[in-house]
Image (cartoon, rainbow, N blue to C red):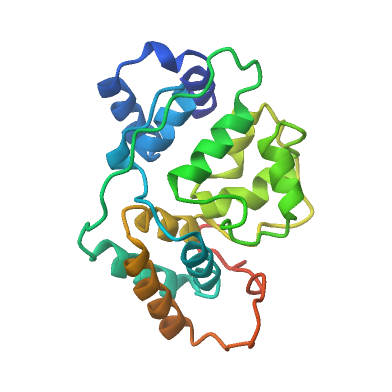
Length: 228
């Protein structure tokens, strides 16, 4: 079974799999277990979800991460992984509606929430808030939009397109952010508000980010991914 076939089968038939099988699929696909549960239409246990955190702090942290280059992203990820787990696990998140004929918007929302992202906390990727809301509401999910959100989620454009039923085609430009940015946000999943404050300071120290004196939506982007 190809990767595309495995993802489509997970989306269509994942409810029939038990947790050990889904954990094994997560290893096979190199995806977080929480994400595989979302795609398969299962509840996500609280110990795989972010603790309750201040949304303003999460937004500021996400913004500062985008100023780090690849070596700095790797260092920031290690900084986050070295922190102790201090947050209390939230309540489990229920499964998406099995009667939903178009599950991708719910899956995308679940992937974002697995990282603690609401629409306003998601880092700026060249899309407006209304566009992201439209994607979550099922209004659209063009390939270029999937490419834009894939990196901060730590997913590939191809995998998201498979779940969305969006055919692949050449695009005129690359994404602002690659999966290395998403790896930092995955490392931050267990971290509390106070820990994110410390991690945001570390991101600023690593990147030597210039303080613009006002909220800027994003850095110029990270286009030189070594995996590209």
